[in-house]
Length: 260
Image 1 (tube, helix red, strand yellow):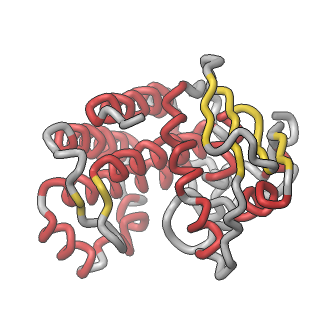
Image 2 (image 1 turned 120 degrees about the horizontal axis):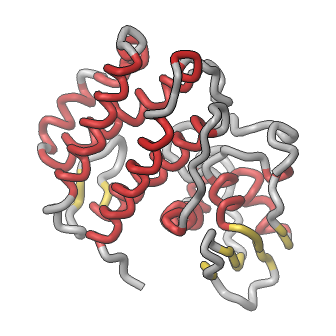
């Protein structure tokens, strides 16, 4: 089913709102807590979102300006610069960056090809990637602070990236992709069903969408979820799954979240 682009932008804005409800409650000690990403504090997670939302907005509005920013390697020291900001300044940066991203995305043709690191992306993929990052880095925050951000059915977009990046997950590690069919049968937070692939495939992944999305974004080790993974193709995929760009991530160790 084709994605309604404006609905997708609405969903990204919804992820922003839910994360804001968390970060506005943080005390000084919460901002400086270590997250489960080695070397990254809570403040670094929000700074990352602010920086990438800024650069994504530039990509939406000014392709030449985006490429110049990449050539200048503007992203190399943003964390260092952000650590000189007060917590209030950091929060305001992210609020401005996320709001501008939504404004920049609204008028874009969903079929447009947009500049990004590496190959160009469709506008739909571009916005979906920002939603995935907002959700996953937001999860890094709520995993360590005394606040909750319940998952919603918006994570279906994260699941969609998860299945689209199956082949990439192998290639990114220098492995030959396993292309045997896998049926993915997930339950969204509302109880609705989300599926992908051939229901008759011998290899299957079943369970909660929240678990699947945590695995493909490397926020949980498979062993700390309740996913049912059947067949060699499904198992090998979940061992390397990576829905985000960049070098192979370290992921999480088994047992970090044993009570989920």
